[in-house]
Length: 310
Ligand SMILES: O=P(O)(O)OC[C@H]1O[C@](O)(COP(=O)(O)O)[C@@H](O)[C@@H]1O
Ligand SMILES: [Mg+2]
Ligand SMILES: [Mg+2]
Image 1 (cartoon, rainbow, N blue to C red):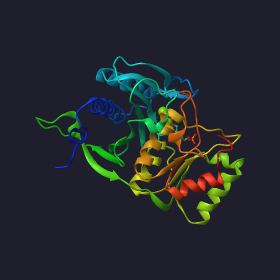
Image 2 (tube, helix red, strand yellow):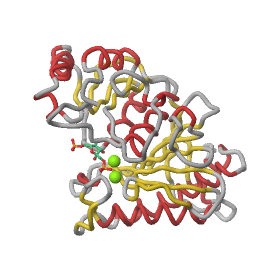
Image 3 (tube, rainbow, N blue to C red):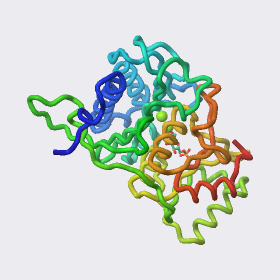
Image 4 (spheres, protein in one colour):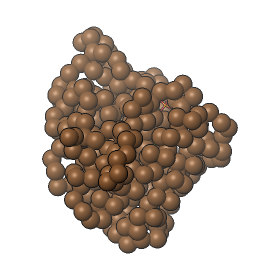
């Protein structure tokens, strides 16, 4: 029988925290299947982004699940970025409740991203101190990909909603993959291409990929675009900046958790000069350039694009 999250996670507060996130993800996945996100706009978040009703709903679903868990002291999210108490004691959890809301209408895969710190506040800490991080993918399948601090790999569980008499909710998440290496390979996912207008390094890098016949695989959803590096075990994803097209991706809610996942799986991450896991978090609303992938690909990004516009 396939190993499930129930048997994989040791008893304790981290298991309870991840269980709460899976409960929320099951609810979000079910809402998306019923057409949530096709409705109207809701409001504007602290980043100035237009929120869909489903962004706000997903944010509330996760907050409620984490409150119920009793093991989360602090939360903050892309939709509600100020750190605030979550009614329990223990972890700090940062999350992007729904990543890729602009591609829900096209029925592309979207996701949820999360990062977990042992306690207190994220401010003054680094991604390297996280106890766990990962993402849920809502596509044809609903999957959880995550890594924990004491294991040097990442893994994936697939949601299979079968229920037997003696099963727990975590038994619905069955182990699918283990990720230990991201090799160099000719696959590229180039975000923020509009910055090539005035980021000459990025322009040269795109030319390098094309003249070397790399395969383009980019959906505009960070979760599936990064998750594919794990599944294919190769390639590069980036989202650089320029003066006219500044950095978009949120350091705490998007960049650092996925960097944790990629580095645990044997890949590298960078903001153009250092690992995203070594950047001190000085606020919850910071944005950053990002590059993830095989060592040589990230080194090439650092050499050609660098950090001039971060
Ligand atoms: O379409 P753009 O503006 O190039 O941005 C693409 C990026 O924006 C995002 O959609 C931002 O995430 P949100 O949907 O959570 O705001 C990423 O998933 C993606 O990589
Ligand atoms: Mg996002
Ligand atoms: Mg979002």
